[in-house]
Amino acid sequence: MTGILAALDFDPRLDEFDPARPEVIRDPYPWFDRLRTLDPAHRGINGLRFLTRFADIDQLLRDHRTFVRGDFAEVLARNFGQNSLNDVMGRFMFALDPPDHTRLRRLVAGSFTREKAERLRPRMRELAAGLLDDAIARGGDTFDVISDFAYPLPLQVVCEILGVPPEDREMLRSWTNDITPTVDFVISDEVRARGIEAAALFKGYFLALISLRRRHRGEDLLSELLNAEEQGERLSERELISLAVTLLIAGHENVTNLVGNGLLALLRHPGELELVRRESERVADVVTETLRYDSPVTYVPRQTAKATRLGEVDLAAGESLVALFGAANRDPEKFPDPGVFRLDRPHKAEHLDFGRGITYCLGAPFAIVESEVAFETLLTRLGDFGLAIGEDELTWRPTIWARGLERLPITVTD
Image (cartoon, rainbow, N blue to C red; front, side, top):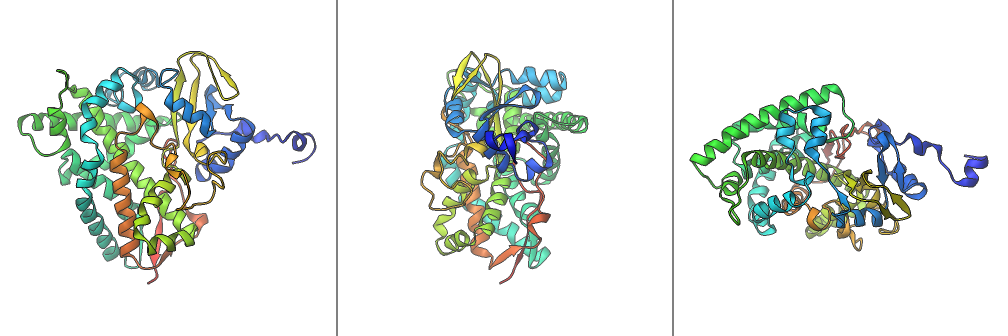
C-alpha cells in the first residue's frame, strides 16, 4: 500500500469485512486485527456494528441493562415467520433478558454445577476411550478427530444427560446439524427451510419424551427439570423444549470445535504439545488457552437499550452490535503476543468465551470437564501423531457464530 493510504494507515478492505466470506471463516484474525486497530466499532453489513476490543466487549457483557439481547422471538418471527423455529428457539435462555432470563436461570442453575460435571468425569472417560478405540480399529493409524471422536463424544454425553435413548441419537444429530446454522445472521433460503423442518421434528420429539418423563421419571436431566420448582414456578413445556435443544446445540457444538481447534493449535506449537505430554495435568491449560486463542464461539449479538458511549464511540439507542469474541481474545492490550498459543500464559482464564456476570454460560462446567477428558484421552492414549493432510487442505465449517474444523485427519506415527 502506497501514497495517501499508506500515510493514513488506511485499509480500504475494512469495508469488505463480511464474516460469512470463505476467506474470513478460514482465517478471521488478520481481519480482526485491522478492525481493532483502525475501526474498533466498525459499521458493516446490514448496518451492524462489529466490536473488536477486549475492554469494549467486556463492558458490553457486564452491563446487561444498557446492552440487551432484545426480543429474540420477534426477530425469529420477522426472519422466519411464526412457525416451529420460533416455538423451539424463541425461549432460548441465552437470547432472553431479565426478568425471563433470571427466572429460567434460577430454576435450572442447580443442574449445571461443577460438582455435577465432575461426577460425570468417569463416564466421560469411558465414552472417550471407547470412541478412540473404535476409531483406531476402523481406520488403523489414520482417523478423523472430528467425525470419529470430537463430535460423537459430547453428543453422547449430552444425550445421556437428557435421557435420549441411544437409538435416537443419530436422528437428533442430523436435526441439530440442520437447525444450528439458523443462529447465524446471514443464511440462505435452503438453510432456513431445513432449520424450520428440524425445529418441527425437535418439537414433536421432545413433546413425546417430556410426556413419557411426566409418567415415568428417571435419573436424567429432563426428569430433574420437571421436578425443578422454586417459589411456585415451573418450566413450561415450551421452555423445556427450548432448553433441551439449546443443550444439544451448545452442549456438543462448542466442545467439538474446542477440541478440534485446540488439537490443531498444539500441532502448530509442538513445544506446547510436548509439554502437555510430559505434564498431563496441563490439559486444563490447553482448554483455557484454546478458548482464548481460537474461540469456538465467534460472536454474541446485542442491542443498545439507550444512547451510550462505548470506548471512543457514541452509540444511539437501538443499535445492533456484534461482539466478536475471537477479536477480543486476541487483543494485545489484554493478552501480549496474542497470536502465540502458550500454556503458561498469565490471565488466559479472563477470556470472554463464557461471557460475564448474568450472561456467564450455564453449561461452562460441563464443557470444561468434557474438553479436559477429550484432550487427556487423545494425548495419553495416542503415540506421536501429526496431520494426515496439508494445512492448506483443512476446511472450516461455513458457520458464522461457531468456529470449528469440518475434519481433522491425523496419522499416528508411533
